[in-house]
Length: 114
Length: 111
Image (cartoon, rainbow over all chains, first blue to last red; front, side, top):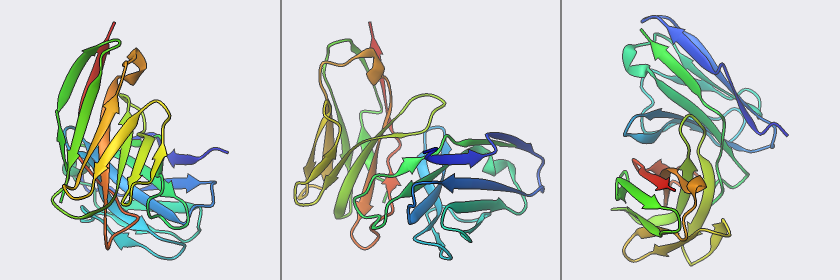
């Protein structure tokens, strides 16, 4: 099992450019999450999904969109990147109930917006 | 809603003990603890559920005071490998499945 994988590992964007981050998991988990991590801020939830075809907003959703067309994939989109979106992005997944369950994290994507 | 972790940082010698605290202002369903090393993903350590159930690591213990909405992580006889940043993630009633993480506690274990 690869667990949770993220693509790409690192990306540099110019302000106003768009991009999509891909998260894939092979554990048949229902719940998937996107977080961003900034120095001194901890992990903040951007969007999450409780199953294929469903998405919901987290703490800091502005400027991001997500889609979960397949159970194993969760995509995070930046339509018009801003320097404030420079961060490390982590994807995570969790089993069926989600409640009181471990979240398994991917290795992260480092994004620099110039 | 973000839980408050204390201390922000701690430096230990190998073999010493440490306690990391996590405090919430809202009623908690569970508290999750993760450790993250620099440049890596967070790794699961422990879950404490309302009612006293625990899941997690054999060599690390934790407590959950439901009345005070507080959790503490106990690291005993610390090893160099314990170094990293520890995060608590709080799961609230009504939003189960989602975690709100604290800002982290940086632990450095020196030889």
